Image (tube, rainbow, N blue to C red; front, side):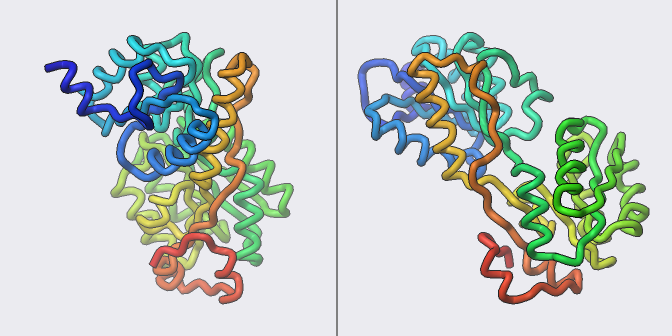
Length: 302
């Protein structure tokens, strides 16, 4: 029965009798976790490398079965997408090189160490703000609203990037959802755009809806970090190109398979990005954009 369960839970890129040299583990069926898998597998296939793909689907039972399979097959490197997947891999095969992707602030989940590298979820702040001023050249002051648990290095990087592109950046932290909600009006009064950094400890769905409504009412562009946050009402984001993420992870895996230590491979920013714009939020905010500039938007959300 257990053998049958494993057969149903797991799929491989090719039907092989020998254990796969590389494993891919996805946290759930969301596109941010699944879209980079195909380009990764294509790169592996070109080199004739066997790959085991494991889908946790957000369930504890699948994570437990995945741990058993990973320990049994002992892959040379694992590509994990999402915090649940990476946490499962690190806990079950801690000495196996791990390449992570699609995780906001991996350190917060303990996804760090000598055997860990990966591709950041967020676009580099310099890339993000450069794209922003290209579409909204009148923006001069950006407020960054974040939870106290947000990575300090990222907040500082956003501030530094602002200076590089001629934008003043002011950051405000909140300790809980109520504090974040309370801070919104005052921040919006002082800025030309608000960058809302995701933090599940303080940014509940209800608070996010409040921020969206308040930003629209005051005609202030709401900047967010993910495609899903744009679709939920945020105005603008610069996100990682999933094809590039998969290809970057594959390059890292090749280096590890060739003998390079994971500790010598730095965590990388996405090598390519996509601009996402919510046209409904644009309209409801009463904001205008040069129609010609829409050609530079990769994903338009209606």
